Amino acid sequence: MLSQLFVNAVIAGSLYALVAVSFALIYRIAGFFHFTHGLTFAAGAYVTFAAHAWLRLPLVAAGAIGVVAAALLGMAIRAVVFRSLARRAAPPLVMLLASLGVYVVGQNVISLAFGDSSRPLGESVISPGLAVFGARVTEAQLASIAVVAAVLMGFAVVMTTIGIGHQIQAVANDRELSEVVGISIAAIDGLVFTLGSAMAGLAGILWAIDQNMTPTMGMRALLIGVVAMIIGGQKTVSGVVLASMFLALAQNYSILFVPTAWQDAIVFLILVAFLLVSPSGFFGLRGRRRSLT
Amino acid sequence: MDYLLHILILAAIYSILAVSLDLLAGHAGLLAVCQAAFWGLGAYASAVLTVDYGVYFPLGILAGMCLGVLASFLVSLPSLRLTDDYFVIATFGFQIIAFAIFNNWASLTRGPLGIPGIPPPTIFGWRVDSQWKFLLLAVIGAVAAYIVVNRISSSPFGRVLHAIREDEIFAASLGKNTLRFKVTAFAVSAALAAMAGSLYAHYITYIDPTNFTLTESILIISMVIVGGAGSRWGPLTGVLVLVVMPESLRFIGLPSAIAANVRQIMYGVLLVVMMLFRPQGLAGQYRFGR
Image (cartoon, rainbow over all chains, first blue to last red; front, side, top):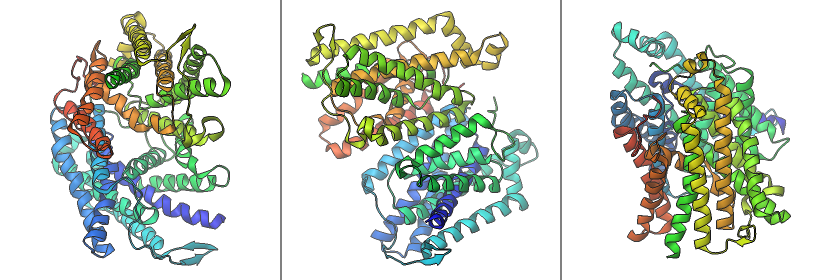
């Protein structure tokens, strides 16, 4: 029982981490709270569903289409909405409200196209799974953990060793100065929205395979991911991953004491407790980005 | 006619909510995403007291408002340590927690089953049992909320709130205890929203947790922002647009299953369009978040 809860927590935590890391990537560059991340998350899963169940593509190919679709969607929303707002020098809260509007539209379009009911993604083959320390893990879950680990490690390597990663870090730290040294801000903005949305879409697909999907799943994942980002302190992948695992463990082991329906509330109670103790994050250097003006 | 009255009553109740949020969002610059939580708190407090304990309606409203004030301290004291985005997230969190409480504390709220048979209000022998009477009651509530918020915003207290909205550090440097002002504004706002909740519960006569979700909080925010935050007529304009406009869908004859989604899409599009072309709102002067 305890080890099963641990395994469940690792699976959930890895997906929270993917959401949190990709959210933080865009958040640190764009400087506003983009609810549209929840939309690209859900869109990845639903496009995969359409490609798999309706076009009868194999799940891996459909998943690739889903990731690409999420990336394109993130890029398009940035180009159509956020870039026009940025040109008008809109303050972060205006950007936040606009992104909330886009999210509401997108979630309801998904509802109209696919219905509100919970749907499974992938074959519903009941697999006995493998036994790991007395817990049951399915092959799909192992694959999910492996994919997330590979993506996050690759991401961390790119951000710390390769030129483009350094450029992203530079823009996150100081936009004006980065422009002065010749980094194309617009290119970096476009890149992080595309890359971050692709990662969100991937997280959505894996989430849907693990626990079914609903049109509102993006908001739920987004809020948990954001809490993980705040606790983990935005800046390092390892901090965010540890915070995500902590949240997932707290959620899963809370089942021993309270009904599962309280799981979402627990995440936010942790956030509140945490904000009271240390508003700048366990691993964080500073609590929040100061707006530029 | 009944239908028109129904829309007017809903508009009056939403006006209370929009005006109460405007005190925070428009006048103090605090974008709180948990107004539906206080709304639900008032509704549940009043419903549980009148249905399960036979409490007199005005006492039910009063209890709901007191509970709203107490809950507002739980929300405001931790979340007001934060600014902008993080404040929004903290209030989001309280909205989620409040929904979990409405939905899961079954022994008190009856959980997802909801509370049916909420009696019509009786005030000093006046039984509010027709739609006309209820419209009168709701309008009285809306006018009262409007007067309270307007009086506050034009008082010295309101001027300090405006100063905090424009530049909190500056306000603090003049010796104002900005936290105290914000906590007080939060409490007033919560009390008004709770009052709207009681009225709503006794009008609809049946409440369940899905009435008071994040979606409703976002709708209330949209009303304030679309109408124009921090302006005299802004929130009321927003209510008018966002309550009346979707009703036009009924006349096009969309099936109700689709209409709910289309209505949400209209809210979202309106929010985006306003942010792009008129961030101060239809009737506003103050540009939100600047």
